[in-house]
Amino acid sequence: MPIDKETSRELAKTLLHCTDQGGEDELKPRAARAVGIAGLLGVVIAAYGLGLLLPVDIAIRRQFAVAFAPEPDPRVVTVEIDDASISAMGRWPWPRSLLAQLVSEVSDLNPASIGIDIMLSEPEADTDGDAALAAAIARSGRVVLPAYVRSYSLPRHVQWYISQRLPLLPITELAQAARGLGHVSAIHDPDGAVRRVPAVVGVPDGFVPAFATEVVRVGVEGQGTRSSASDGGLDFRPGAQAVVGGYRMPLDSTSSMCPVFPWPPAAEQISAARLLAKAPPEALVDDRSPNAGSSPRLPDLAGKFVLIGVTAAGIGDSHETPLLARHGAVPGMMVHAAAVNAILTGRFVRPVHAAAALLAVACFGALLGAVSGAISDRGRGVGAAVLLHVGAAVSVLAGSALLYACTGAWIGPSAPMLVSVLLLAMELYSRACRAGRLRAGLRKYVGVDSPEVAGAEAQAGARDMAVMFVDLRGWTAASYHMEPESAARLVNSYLSVVADVAAEHGARVERFPGDAALAVFEGRGPEDLACAVRAARAARGAVRDVATGQSMALGVGIGIAYGRVARVELGGADRSDLTVIGTAVNIAKALEDAAAEDQILVGVWPERVESLPSGLVPWAGRVAKIVPGTAVLFEAV
Figure 1 (cartoon, one colour):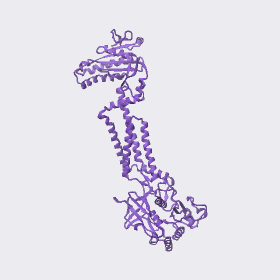
Figure 2 (cartoon, rainbow, N blue to C red):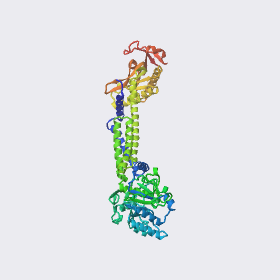
Figure 3 (spheres, helix red, strand yellow):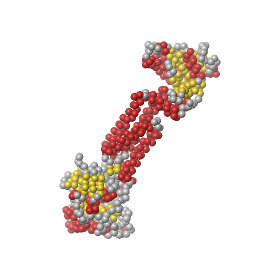
Figure 4 (tube, rainbow, N blue to C red):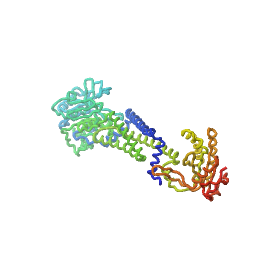
């Protein structure tokens, strides 16, 4: 019966079972795997908690932000004091009277609200300019001005940022004319990018809402009610959400909103020069504006949320955003535009709480480890394990991307992806150990390195070999009254040296039938017989040396034959042995039975007598089990 792949697999399982010794030891690999998975998860969770995986997650999140950047809400418009405006109207800073004109021009187009992202904390030398700007702001009735909060921090057990210093406000005249005041602070993440805007910042006399929040509040309330965020216009629930004008803003644990940054930053980006009608025609059209035409006609700002700020090169603040890789740093006004856009559209990034993320990593690792173990126990190949773990890592990344794109939920995929990679490494290491145990078991019990080799040898056919039987003389009588364990230790002390000597001379020990050893020498042609004779002499000497230190001295009888031998599988479907069979095997066994203590008998086919090794002399004895004329008999002296 040839050994096919299924039989080879069963042979491997049987040998692994033998090497694991069954019983309670059979549970040891599973227990070790469970301990390994637990330790691995502990390492990954610790790395996640210490922020060691944060750079990877940030890099992935940057790619998601660029890939899934939405279109801006059509209601968000920016009026930019850009390079064309500076060229047309003169160097910055502009006179407050010119800003007043710009505010009036925007107000005349009936926007929902106007946010001016320009710090106006110091009076102008010409007080008439301040008065003109205050009048324009008051007439508009829908202007929000910025406040600058300095040196804020996040104290322990507090869910919003707090500053111990009063905010830097616009001059009193302007602040009183404005409809609302909002802070223009933003949080920079460890990579330097702005992803969060505090919904409020605590100050000694209360709190200051975000600039974008005030722009939305004023725009939703219209010109009727003059409320503010601090007196009820903002429903603020620390660490949970904020609601303004019916728009809900989910907040993280620091009470910050995480807007999804659209591209372009606004539906329409208008040069201030276009409204002031002072720029040349070619400078009045902003090429970045998707709605800009080829002529300086007035834009449609009715009902829109307009932000006015500086975007000219080298003027004002600029920030890195998640879109940095593609679009570079942007002026601070664009951060507020993204926040306004997020409030109006509800498109926020919602980071999953750290505890929930760690729990998800632990569950993912336990599940993947269990599936991986099941695949390993079923004997699936390395390809299945690699496919499982690589597929799991890719699925985690794809799932994270899908959650981000569809719901804005963000859970860093680096930790579960690392778990997948480490579990794969652990699985490959475990398989390598199992393969090592299998090879050791095959060498020990079968004499080959793999089930495939065993199958190949079983189908290789007959070939010339030298066969050697070494039998212990006096063993049966010596062990008659011994305990089985003691008898096993004694016989092993002899057979182990016989096996070692045979292996040193190039033999392959096939099996140990009782108190004997069966070894074969192959692959060298006629030299195999010479190797067998030398091994027999060495085995006889080694047994004598062992007998010197034993209370029961044993000898050996050795039979050797050279001829055609086949290695075959003998037995049934459920249990079989891989062994050698042939006339040479029978002759070697018969000679071993006939040999006296410490005698070495050799049988050779008549046609091979001319190539005998040295040290053989004809033996005149007769062996009943050997057909006369089949072999010429010799004794090694």
